Image (cartoon, rainbow, N blue to C red; front, side, top):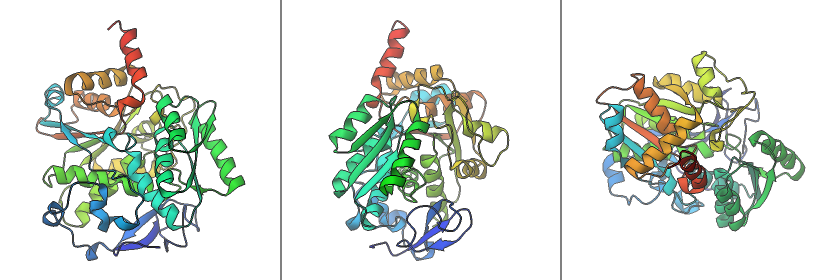
Length: 396
């Protein structure tokens, strides 16, 4: 396998064992824990001046901090999305600055492209002919796109309630789609059965070590675009936690490299209809308890049993951040308010970051000079019908 110079293999976040990238492909062979990419940071010569000389064209400009070099990558030039200044929101929240990291402008319209680029590269390097995952929607569309580019067959298992755009684009990109009635738990069960029967290469969140590895590049971009100044807070819509865990790893690596001295407070934003992370955080638990009756229109973050919750909760506590839940009405209202006031099209689930940030601001969580970054993890174009229906229901 072709890997980058500083990449030293995979480390289990649970038992600490290390494995060669060719020998371990998914979970820890010893304990079943999540594997994470490891690097020899002391050998990485990377600074702001060197990065400034590179085109701001894709996340692969940070290839020293990724497992695979750009020339080996399955890429559609993902990453380097805008960091949009939102002065009206800053004024309303009573903070110094609000910025939205707009991942909706990614190749398939969501932040999932970052992780899928790295994960699909690993799959091709391992000789996989078929890849598979269960998804609420965005990752299903992304895996079909990236697997198609790699010449690999993709199999996506989506719940029936996934939005039409995601389901349509899985097929348009050439993916094999299985739509399962009910919710994401039903799709996961069908996917697990298929993996066992067919032996496909799994690309599920945290099953592969590489999806959160791609997600971390969003953190590099945020800090670099702020002139190597660290925002006071980053608010991330959170379901399974790939984005949040990735962002925390990204900023932690920048500090390890000496590019920054401080770390931002990380906040998880969920819907009150499915908030296992918020509940676990508030109760001081190290692992979530499964949400018994998930009920939210925000399907992208409706994950009742996020298996990597210990990593999410650790990031929240170590960063000095927190977790916040708002109801669907507030989330939809926030998506519309951001579109009207700032022009940024936040996806229905992604807008939990905006409603959560407003709630945190009202509770005095932020200072008047703070810089707050919201992650818009998906384009509103994917579920614009939901937002418009909400408007029509209000008689607007």
